[in-house]
Structure formats: C-alpha cells, structure tokens
Image (cartoon, rainbow, N blue to C red; front, side, top):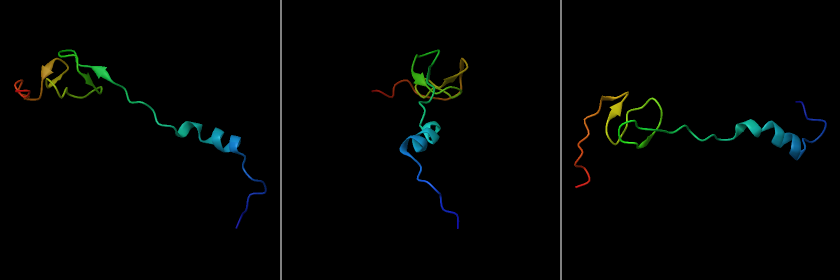
Length: 63
C-alpha cells in the first residue's frame, strides 16, 4: 500500500480545493410581473413562460 513521502501542506490542500466551492444560481425577472425566477422556467406568480400563459394560476390567492 502506497504511503505519501511528505505531508500535504495546508496551502497545497486549499489550492487543490479552490474549485469545489458553491456558486450562486442565476436569477432573472419575469417579463410580465417582474417576479424573480430561475431562467428557462415558468413564473410561479403569474404562470407565464416566453410571453405565453402556460400555468393556470388564479390571481385571487392572496384573499
């Protein structure tokens, strides 16, 4: 079984792991209502996708 000859330093270990961080996902705004949505998905507030109504969402949900 192979054993490393020298211990890996903190700097080398951290340099190797720099690309393993999380990234913030992209967020756009709905063209109809202006709500923040993820790209290429229907809006959950108004139900629009590419200026077409694809989801039947009632507008009186707040009452």
